[in-house]
Each structure stands twice: as structure tokens, then as C-alpha cells.
Image (tube, rainbow, N blue to C red; front, side, top):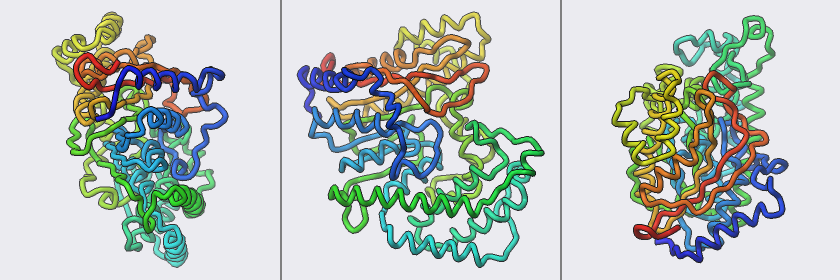
Length: 451
């Protein structure tokens, strides 16, 4: 159990608020939000800012030095994983997207940097020696998304990676291939959604997947080397492996069944259903076509790639069919939800259904997550309030009330501006957000305590 008294709550509130006492824009990290070492391996959508996660974790550990285990039920690219490792804490995370799991498992090590450099040279050698012109993968609309010359080059890279025996090394190389796919496909890189370039642009682009792969691989070798040095200097490595637990699970946070309990959860869930906010699955669709899913996880099934929308359909709010009981249950747990739903009464029915579907699924995550949180444990949510039907959705208020019904109580709320976070482009029901809320909450030791 985490020791949680009113004095601990006061100290935590004071510590967090003191950070912005002399700089009201402190939490934006406007000039200090770069992604270094393990944080910089891949451009994943809407990544958590490492400096935000670090500041929150630092203050929590000052007040509660007994914190040992960190959880993240929406682990994404693994920002919280890396920050936990740098503090020597145990970490477990969950995500439904296989690409996120690949990123996290690579960032978790092992950190055999010298061996990895040798293997990188071998991969380069196999690419150089490959004279075959066959294309290794096939999927619907393959020729739409990749020029033929790009397909052949990516196939050489894929064959070279498959020729590596060590799984931990193949995972590292798959990330570099994913970046090459992202930058040389026919999809625009200005949006997270798959958006085909015009014919003239597709044919005139100067694409060299092998050069991109090699450049990314060398950059990532440096990033991972720096992370290994930081971990080693802090005494967190033993023979190149992280001493504590650093595990991620490919799965649905609505169904998490982990045995370990978390002392603190720091997470940033989707701000709405993926179809209308950040389409993580759609963004991952093309890279995952080229990666051996078995190298990511034995449970990564090819069915997740049956369409460009499948992963997003499996995610929060992806199943749009709602029952009247869904709205009633949510309304009973959250006054803010009930009021917001009423504000959409004159809007097209689809909008209320999307909102209900998302919160139904988010509420389904809250129960198993709160069960895994120790009594007195902290949970920090970094969220943004998007618009639906031109009306700002109070995700922070609704989430706080849903958690409150599970005896997880709000300690403080911080606001940060988003100076450069890449979000989904404005469309008919969502717009780019300029601020995020940081909700710091505590699971009460017994009913009525903790706040």
C-alpha cells in the first residue's frame, strides 16, 4: 500500500503547482520538448511529451519514495516505459496496436550495443549483396501505396532482416524498416491518416528506401547507445539487461488481467474514437504489412490488418453500435457526460453515438485499471478536450467523475499548452487541440479517503 495521508496530498499538490509558480507556461516545455535517446526511435502519432512524464514522476517519487511499479494502460510508443526505466522502476504497459508493442519491446532492451552494431553491418552487407527483384509481401492495394521500385527495395531490406537470427536485433531493425515504409510510401506524411499523393507527385518523388533505412538505423543505434549509457551509469543494467521489470502486453485495456499491482499509473489515452481523432491503427497499417508479426508477439494476428481500419475498430469507440443502457449507465456515473449528451440533442444522431461509444469503452478500461492500482496509489491522466459538433467535449470532467465512482479521487488539475504536438488534421467533427489537462488522482485507501 502507498502511504496516503492529507499531508501527502498537500505536499504533492504544492510540488506540482510550484513548478509553474514562476513560469505559467512551464508544462508546455515549449523550448525543451525534444525527443532524445530511446524517445527518438520512431515518429509515432501524438506521443506523450517525455518532459511532462518525467516532471510528474519526479514529484510523485519525492512525496512517495516507496513507489516501485509504474503502469500505463495505453502505452503507445513507450514514453512512460523509458522514463520509468531511467528511474530504475518496474514497468508494465498495455496497447492494442502491434506497432506500439514493437517499439516498447525494443526500448526495453536488451542493450547489446556493440553486438547490434556488428549485426547492423551484416544487415547492410546482405542488402548490398541481394540481387533478387522479387516483392516479399502482398496485400490489397499494394501497388496503390508503393511504387514498384520502392517495393523491390523494401523487399531487400525485409529479406536482410529475416536473415538475422536474434529476435531482439530483428525488432530493432523492423523499427528502421517501419520508418522507411512511412517515408517512401505513396501516403502523405502531413497527416496520420492514409492519404494518397497525386499521380504526378507519386511518380516524381525521389525515394530511396535503403538510404532511409540505413540513416534511421544509424540514428537509432546512437539513440539506443545513449539510453544504454544512462541506464548503465545509474546502475540499472546487468550484463546489458534492465535489472527491473519492463514488460508490455499486446491486448485490450478493457480486458487487462495482470497480477502485479501498480503504485502509480501515468497515461495518455485517446481523446476520442480513433476514426475522428488520431487514427493510430491506420497510421500503422502500411509499416505492419512489411513486418513479421510473429516477431512482435505470438498473439499478433494477421486479422488486425484485414483492412486499413481494423486496429482502430478494435480500439476505444471503434464499435459504434450503442444501446440505450450505455447512455444511461454513463449518465448515472457522470453528470458532465449527461449534460454533454443533452447538448448534442439537436445534432445528427451519429455524434451522440460516437461520444457514447467512446466513453462506454473508456469506462470499461477504468474498472480493471483501478483494480490494479494499489490502495493509496496515484493515477495521472494527460488528456485533451476535443470538439464534437462544434462543442468542446469535457473529457477531463467526465473522466474525473467516472474515476470518482470507482473511489479514485481528484487531487489537482494542471493545464498545459501544446506548442507543437502533431494531432489529427481538422475535419468535420474534430479540431486540433491547443491545450491538455493533467489530472492527478489518488485511489482512496478506504471509502471517502485520499482526497
